[in-house]
Length: 168
Figure: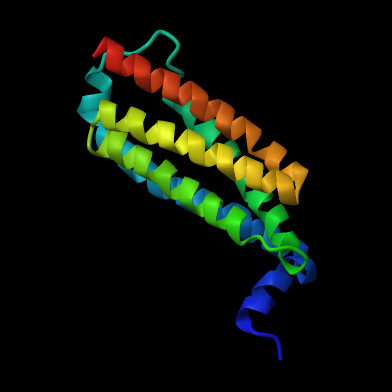
């Protein structure tokens, strides 16, 4: 009889569509948890900040994050599919760590209303994403490629975070 861990590893091969949906929904759910902190800091704090000229509107930011979380879900699913043939502990651990840091950035920047804490956290996040991409690349190049838009967006977010510090 297969262990629980073996069943989890085999699940994407036996149920590819369902496992893909699960991976995407888990990433979207984690993203929603971060947006709770964002909502806490929007009024009046964020609204009263001097904003960089290139700050995108909130609705566009929301759409971008929804797309990015879906891409992350597909990426981690591709890695999950490889778990029966390869050791994916490091990539999955790095992915989980960067996801936690992502949520922490929202909590620190918006929840705690800390611009400086935000730039420190987003810098750590950027490094964690890069390490995740590198580890994904060793397992599945498509999974790594799906993470590129995410690190690009976090680069823009870091530049905006730094601009907020300069302007405020």
